[in-house]
Length: 192
Image (tube, rainbow, N blue to C red; front, side, top):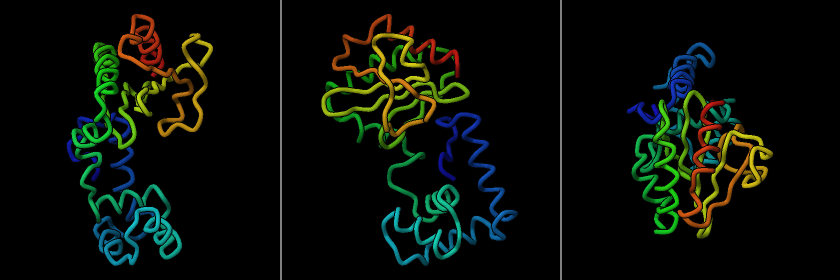
């Protein structure tokens, strides 16, 4: 199961993974082990092609197929290896400084679950309230706040994180991560 060490998953995410695993036999007629054996017969090698193969050949849709594939072909970096994901994503020194400044504010809040993804770092309470991703010498901070909450925010557009994060702040230096950013993070945390 992705996240075998569940410290990097919220309670909601843990329940989701458990529900997918336990629901496979009831909803598909096959156990996870049986689906993993089937996955290993897939002639495709790329993830998207394997997902398409599962859907076309076995009727298994994206979420379940992704779960099965993560068990059949564990990635070198994934939910189980947050440090490796983080190192690969935050390799630029300027981006690392921005991450450190934001993370200092986020982790000062209680009950925060830090989750590292391939394309961003995420923070949740019950639900994701903030995420940060590097983009060519800047970082984009997504928040679970309406853009009207601050002139620093703009509407999120086609971001890779939770649909709950509806606003974005572009951060170009760690010095921009001030008390106003701390208040925005706290406000987003409060609604999560």
